[in-house]
Figure 1 (cartoon, rainbow, N blue to C red):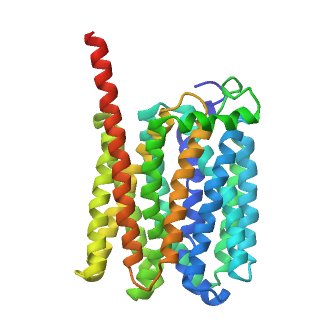
Figure 2: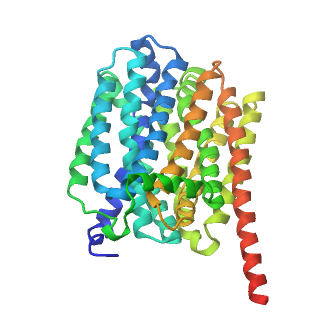
Figure 3: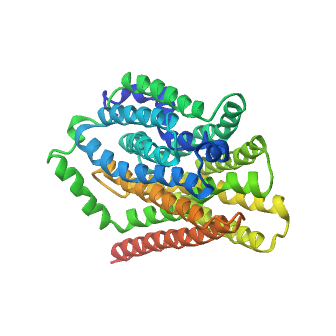
Length: 409
């Protein structure tokens, strides 16, 4: 680590990265319990309100594709400050919205800003750590980040109990302002001699190399497929639990929080085991366990067997596997590139949140008042994620065989 990155050591590194990587979750989880109330206030249907999530993911996915190359050329700090400022403007616009389509538009703006925090936070991890240490660091960050989505719906429900849904977005404005002040006091993590020198066009040209990187694309595929199921759950779960199973918003917040606890536990396990088994095997285990949970969820939604406990239990296992998949897929994908870490992080993020956009849009389009649409999307997405992770494992085995053959020759 150079002197330029020394300020990021220890507690302040973890604190800063946790906040940045947590922007994606706090931007959505905080207002999930308010979706039914927002629908009544704005005169919008369930499917239309769920577009506030898929619209957010649209802006988030494409925003990353811009911030990544820009940061490879000009460093991480300047783009971070700009992105957080855009996030604040978007959150204020949401608070002032008077109909659903205004809300959807401002959510896109908010997402473009939030995407800078997440993609550049991941790029900073790549700046500072090798693959296994990056996986351990990301697991630690996700354990800490788990606090935000765990308490987010509960805090949102409490705000809703004493005020209107508008104040949920004013809370996000405040969080953005505090983060902006924090980033302003930090140092740059990407030294001048490691930045691109060919202009911004060359920075964007790195995407061509990334698309030809089969390992990076397999990691991206795993992230994207699994995220389709995760965001189908995020978009549809409040309606399923509150309206279909008749839970209160507070109880729904606790159910949602239990899944975050599972993710935190899985990240703790991943942190302890990654040096022993490697990130690829843990990634494969996570996708296969998630696929099993998806199959059980689909069977329960189809037959009704076991009722709410069985449905919630299968969802818990599925969501928990995000703790094994996220950190290992991101660390592995970033380690597979030698240059253009910002654009590689953007591509991984685009796949992850682009998959999430598809999943959330599908669950809104297919909404029929039952858990079946969400269960179908989760089952299909986990099957596809397992297939992508198997490609990675096969590729690794082929590389080891080639090395062994070369050495014996």
